[in-house]
Structure formats: C-alpha cells, structure tokens
Length: 374
Image 1 (cartoon, helix red, strand yellow):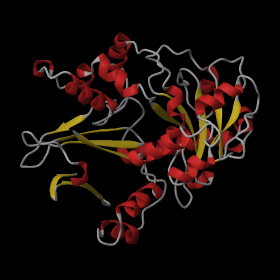
Image 2: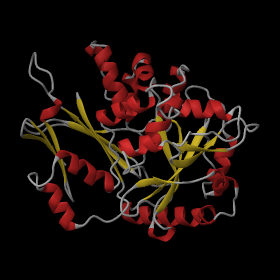
Image 3: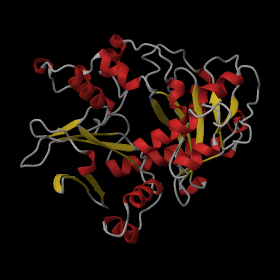
C-alpha cells in the first residue's frame, strides 16, 4: 500500500499566515485543508470526486450532462454541440484526423459545481475519452521506458500493481519499469490516463493564465496516429523541435488568480496564431525555463538530469523505525510514495493516514505516528 501525493508548482506565493493556519490541526476541518491546498495549485482527486463525477455523468438520460465521448460523437454530425442549458467552461478538441475540424466543447457546469471550482477539472472529465479499450504494445513500452520519461512516476504505481498481481518475489528488481506486468499496465490505464502538457504556464506577465494540452498518456503505446495540428500548436508556442502527440487531444485554459481554476478558451484562440497568448508564449516559456535553470543550476541540455527525473524514482530506505519511501519529479510536479508496512494479518486503514504540508517539509503520519518526514 502506498500514499500518493501530487504537488504541482504553486501558482502564487504562499502567505505565512495561511501556512500557519494550515498547520493548526484544530482550526481547519479536513475539507477546509483540502480546499486550502486546491486553491494553491495542489491537484487533488479524491475518491469522493470520482464518485461524484461518475454519479453526475451516469444519471438518467434526461437529467445528466453529456459525457466527453458523447460530445465528440455529436461533433461528427454537427459543428456545434448543444448542452441543453448545461454549458459550462469552454475548451477545445483537436482531432488527429486533419479532415475533421477543431471544435469548441464544454466542461459541464454541473460537474464544475460538484467537484470545483478550484483545481483543473478537465483531466477528470476527459479521462473517459481515453478509455478506448485499445491494447498497449508491451514491447514498445519496454523500449520507450529506457529512453524517456514516458509515464513519469507512474512506473512505481504500475510496479506496485504488478507486485500485487504476481507474488513471486524472485522477480523483484530495483528498476520499477522492469517489474511492470502487461496486466498491471492494462489495469492502470483501462479507465483512461491523462497527461497534461503546458503550452504556457500561468505567470504575472500573462495575467496568471496558462494553456495546456490534455492527451492520452499512453497514446504512443497504443499506436494511436500522430496529431500534426497539436504538434504545430506546440511549435507555435516555442517548442523546438515540436513534440509528437498521439490521437485526439484537448486544449484548456486555467487561471491562478485568487485560486487555480478553469476558464474559457475557444477554437478561435487556437486557430488564430495572432492571439496575444500564443504570440507571447515563446517568450513566456523561455523566461520560465531560464528561471528554472537558475534555481536548479541546470545549464542547457548537457548537464546530467537531477535525481528523481526521467521517470526513475529515488528509493530512500528507512534508517530507524520509520517507513521507506520513493520520490520522482519533473519540472512541475513531485510524487512521493510512502511504503506503509503492516503487521501480519492486518491491512492498512486509510483513515489513519494523515499528511501535513508545511513550507519546508511534508510529514506523513499513520496511526498518529510519524512514518515519513521529508
């Protein structure tokens, strides 16, 4: 069992008074603490969020909003999809097939009201679109795993699932990608797996607005066709060479003003290359990368990667009675996996897990005992 924490770069500076408030356990309820983190760019998807989204999207035919799959299916017949009064936040669909138009679609208002407004809700909504039932090429996965950060820290998640499926301890290895079984990989991505690619990040110089591509995280492994328009869009935003995107993708916009949340973006904002956000994107991305290089000491592409990057987790063994843990990072996110030990015959009670986020450290407690402090 593991405790997974996803920490995205904070869209705005934290205030010391708010930080102190977060650490006063008796002044904030768990829901208030969760909201506090969401407002500061920490992406949290709880089991309640998933159940709420599933409940809204699986209601009666007359009383529920269109799913993302239904919206795309209707686009094949009409240029504009009617949401029957449930139009929420606008975002964009870019098909891989260049004969099909780029279209504006909607994030249902009822879904935003239910699990938002804080945070980026688009990944939750489009996830089901990527649950297409297509098989993953295991050999291609093995080949790509050794070359690049294809699935980020999810290697550890897949490896843990493999260990659960296969109790043969003789197959254990320190390389998580080598421990992934076809069954674990298929199970982990069966419900859809979304990767977020930043075209431009929120900053004070662009009104704190960011634009992101949402794609199938394992599109390459499914042999999905290349999406040339998505690559062209990334190139327009300053990425040289332009990355490859596979299958259909979506484009959304967020703002970090006051708190991180989705705002409208329409197809005209994607098609018209004279739009201000796109014209400024290369400069914004260069400035962001320069700042990252200054902070990390990274110089160009010749310096070795920092620990925890390229999808290879750093394992930290326990030096006392505490739990061992692993971590992996990229330029936007750090994922910490705590390996909770359990007594023979006992499971792990998730209600006993408590995580405290502080300015300089994260503390994980289980049954009131500190198991990890980073």
